[in-house]
Length: 365
Ligand SMILES: Cc1ncc(COP(=O)(O)O)c(C=O)c1O
Image (cartoon, rainbow, N blue to C red; front, side, top):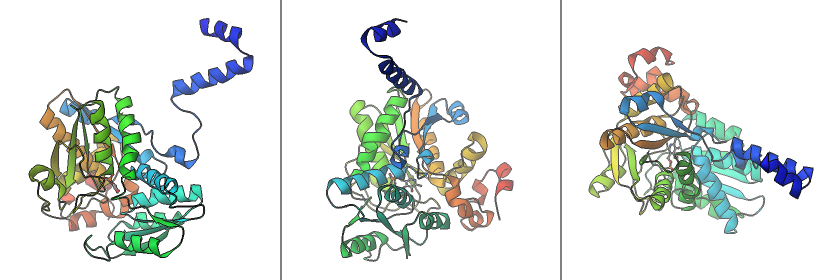
């Protein structure tokens, strides 16, 4: 009543309508967003109920598959394009060129369509067919190339850089070493986690590919409260676990069924990141949690999400009950349907027995 009286005294009915619309939007936490770009970020933070009960911690996940392009990498894609425009490297009608395991490319392709840019994607030919097909459907010029080490001049990133150099008005967005990627998480993911937990977050855990998510979120949250722990969850076959634990760039044993995570070097995005500790997550654990997330919590996600949740469990064990631990569900299981949900493929990779027996009937052949 008091508010209405004040408004009646000071403004027109139109002003009152504007204000009540503002309050409605404020209360619902939303408003009309700016096209596709408006679907990047501001993802829900969701408690994993069964897992929280089992660990005595609040295990919460950012639902990153809810970004418009379907993955956490939409955030990096947006900031990489913004960075190129701000630096004058990309003018109207120009071409964005990137080397990507797929998800950054999918984000870039959506944003290029929305902003009128062309998109050329170099990716290792080991990545899932679903991601390649999707990129083509989005209108990207997709160039799968043999998967070779970063030190090889034919590595997909070097090919992307050379191609961008060879044409006019084109930029190689360079997600691994362009720190606009990390900035996306300093400016969006980190603040979202802080606000959504009312600052009551004790730890974050992420697997890393470029390192943008972990480094950006850790940097932001530690500035807010230096006691918040930042943990790396690393897949088998990556060097980062040994680097954080022992300061050595030595690969852990095996190679991983996960896509988009694991590293052979310290990227510019990861350099200097305030990481407290690291957990090694085997493919068996990542696969088990991918299936448990589906059948016990209801989330159909890819294996890097399973790995993140397995990492969160290790964090809960380390910290003990009563803590709030945040990670993310990076993308959807649909992106890996033919691989991760195939009995034959899982058997071939030696991880079929990681799928809890009760859930094996749901696999395809
Ligand atoms: C499925 C998936 N999960 C996690 C990540 C890791 O994110 P970041 O590159 O920020 O370390 C990626 C990166 O490509 C990814 O594709």
